[in-house]
Length: 284
Image 1: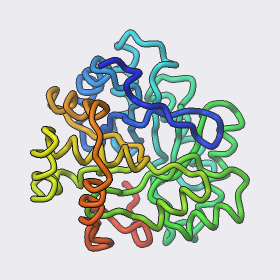
Image 2 (image 1 turned 45 degrees about the horizontal axis):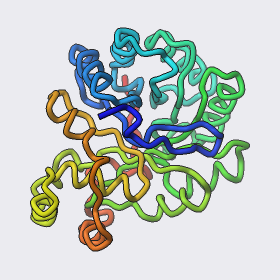
Image 3 (image 1 turned 180 degrees about the vertical axis):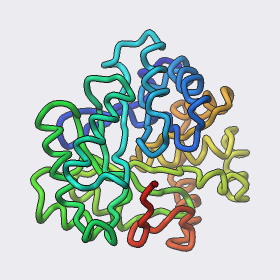
């Protein structure tokens, strides 16, 4: 499939982002360059990494080795939880650019709001991202794992509306309140853990739908995300699955099928990762 098979979605700052990307969470650094390189060969043009993943350098290496111009690949990274203080955040961003060996980032996110840390102050951290965007060293800025009250506080105290909010979303956790706030305020939703770390793939409803449409359960779930407007970046180190996850733009799910998948939502009971209201992990 050609790279332009993936839709580009407009952000609220005038930039665009490919709706499908490749994620590198939990991919070992030694495996990252090869996996990202394969994804770029297949046609992915959006790579999602983070300082806390420990593989930024390998992502940069893969992009440079791909033969693609830097401007052709949309790269996201995220601020380490240990560096929310403004001066620390500035230094952390410089470190991210140095690891990637890039002059700029396409998107930089606050990885977690950490409302029980730093005296609950994520606004001053956000203002550093606003500085970085004004300086041109990052094209777009956003947040990750922000709940509605966190977003409301930014709206009241900051100047720039986040371009995206990267949150846990999959058929077992629709995260509809946060997604609805995003729609109302022109903040796009990026769905991490789009297949619930594989837990939804054996779901009988999804298996039945996959049989009906002649696709794999993973492709069905990823297509469900796309039709809802989510930005997704599934990850794998298996070449066949990297390609399988890319092949989701040549079929559609009808409204009844979308409703069947929506019906799998378990609310908070379906959450697989930490709750952003209480998550307070800071790396050593």
